[in-house]
Amino acid sequence: MNQIVVLGGSAAVIALMLLIAALLGFWQTARIDAVALERLLADAEPDARIAESAIADDGRVALARLSDARVLIAKAMGDRIALRTYPSPAVTLRLRDRRLRAAFADLGFPTLNMKLSDPPRWLVDWAASGGEKP
Image 1 (tube, rainbow, N blue to C red):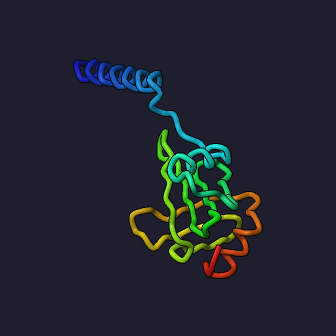
Image 2: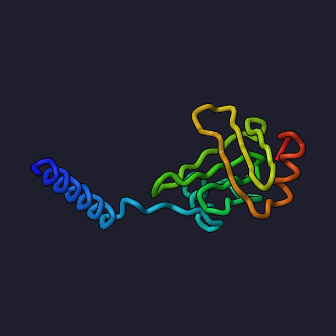
Image 3: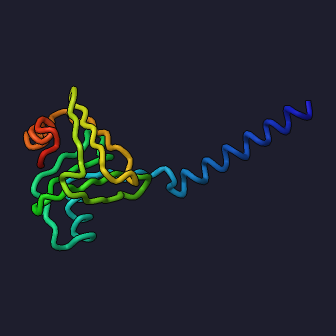
């Protein structure tokens, strides 16, 4: 009987902690859209401009070709969005069944997986070229 009371008390404390975390906003997640992507790039690199972009259907990942031929990667990580730029030869793309997989020469950033209901033409062409250029 004593173990049931301890187990019940522990479960109640855990439920209370989860409720407090929810009220404090610990489950907020960032979403990427075109406006947010432009704003984040302007904050990080004021001189850079987005030529074309693709945003995953769930809004958690984006890939963009910049006007200077670099590639911008944006990934929502919790309530923040991480940005990385790469020279285009450092990015390898594969597009199959409307799923894009981008691998990077830099091992510090994980492989990017995106689901795109309607992949833009520039991205389809780039993936088909074997990653020659965006």
